[in-house]
Image (cartoon, rainbow, N blue to C red; front, side):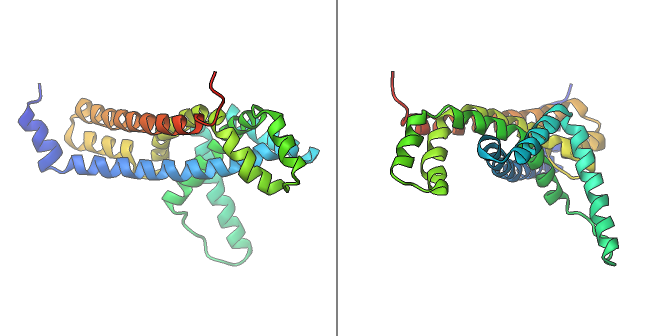
Length: 237
């Protein structure tokens, strides 16, 4: 049984608490970058599915179907290693030296592309839930397409999308742990390193779980505030 003094030695004196906190910050940075990228991709794909030409709609459907059907771990491995190989093949074709992909950028891109497939369906469903009379009224006033999207569609869809986006964010935070498989250091990989170095596996894996739990609690509180703010524009029954 480990004592409080032993825990203090491990987390404070040995510096593992700071290392875990830094790993948690990296996980949040990766998740935030991928979340924003995924929202951008999802919005574009959702608009294509709703109003795009037939060939683009087929491509959008293929993208969302493929990326939602395959395990995230497999997609990360494929996108990271295959993407790096394709990039270096292109560099070789241009007689340029091979490049090393930045781990942080690769993590954001890979997770963002994967999450874009899920956010596209959330956004598409939210847009379809908007009362069509709002869109008809905007068109009757002669509002051009992109202004209609920015001033009518996006604000009106948020109350319908917020719950789904909240769940997507929490899943993304957990999925950021999968990036450790390609050698980038984040919260789980730091915990694994600490456990391997000290042989206190239970202590450090429970500490990692505690960090994820705190992130989940704080994230849930933030999204509840955002949900209340967006729902105030909905009709109250």
